[in-house]
Amino acid sequence: MFNIAKLFALLILFSLMVNSNVKAAQQLTCATTHYPPYTTFDKATNTFIGSDITLLQMLFERINLEVKIVNLPWARLKKEIKKNSYDCYFSLGKFPHREKYLDYTSTPTHITRIAVFTPKNNKKLDLTKKVVGVHRGINFHLDITDLHQLENSTFKKLPSNDILFKMLSHQRLDAVITSKVVGEYVLKLHHPEFVANITDITNYQLPTYIAFKKQTIDISMVNNALLKIKATHPQLFEK
Image (cartoon, rainbow, N blue to C red; front, side, top):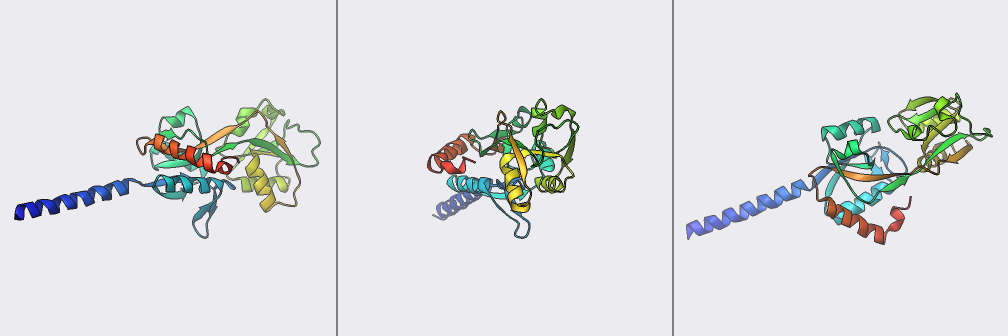
């Protein structure tokens, strides 16, 4: 009788340990970067808001995943992918060199469209020998070098869109190339007095995704959850 009771207690203890381990395995750390309005990091409260954050929080709740989100500079975040430092990353363009380390979802969090921002007094978009600001580590400009005489431009790489548009508004740059949504947001928020010409690069689109370190999660489960969210909340994806 004693042996049976002891065995029963051991089985209960083992079950608790297994459940604890399963729960711990679902506590992931995800890295992203300050990129408003998609992801906006508030240093004072150490929290994120933004359209991508809303979508991701809904996803994590649906698949019962506890996630800690950390803010990294974009240049560092890219380096961390190879180091397997974090369990997931968002929102990332899908490229073969990253797919070596990551499993991507099939549904993008948003689709990046880019534009060229210039002062309103520029009547013709000719960037020959002009100083063009770009976000350090984001190579939109390399994909459109055949447009607007960009091959003859001088590129100035800066660490944030906030700095890019501050310099543009102070006439220290002739143009900025960045996400159209992000650029319009930064101008409206920080430089409402600055009037810009905005030239859409209509043939350029870059879907961005959440991506998990390989063997971290059942990616098909995540994909199914995203599709269900898209069916009920399509506005979260139409950005």
